[in-house]
Image 1 (cartoon, rainbow, N blue to C red):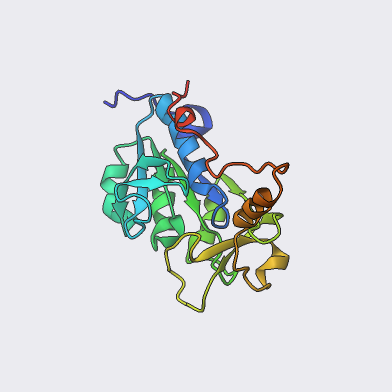
Image 2: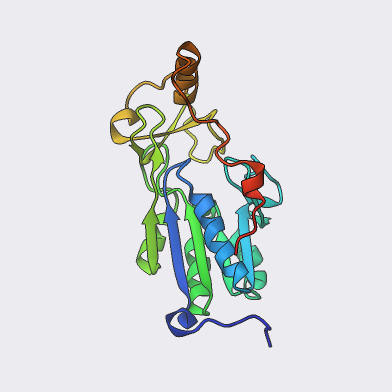
Length: 226
């Protein structure tokens, strides 16, 4: 018998939580936050990452500011089905890349597992990404996060790709993608990032103070969560 606490109430029936948003909106950060809450409560947790996404870490999911949480890599979720059955909570990052995402999540939820999925809801063409939107009607919770538009600093709800590549699955970061608002989505990409523009202003005027690129110091990152 498992030594981990079991879910009670509604959660005894399992559930699917979906975290949508464009790139740079904090989806992985939110997935990590939720998974750590369950880990702190001593639930048996499993995190799964897309094996081809090795931008920041090979053996863990990682945010754009390099926070890492250990994960098992795979290209097909069904390959980890037996392993997932041993856990109470399963977190999946970059869920849009998995062709079996819907059936996998539904099966686990029906067996009483809590499944948390972080994923892009749309492609760089503002179309549904793979099968991911079919999670919506079977999920208990769906949220869409916004990024900051990298052109006008408003709310960025869409992912815009730089260059002319038309293949849907192209993994990259700021060198390849922008988060934009609706208005800036169709505008020409700027050659200089907003942060560099602000830094130039601060250098020209010593009275203008600009936030550091490092939002969190190492001391803050090392603080234990209680």
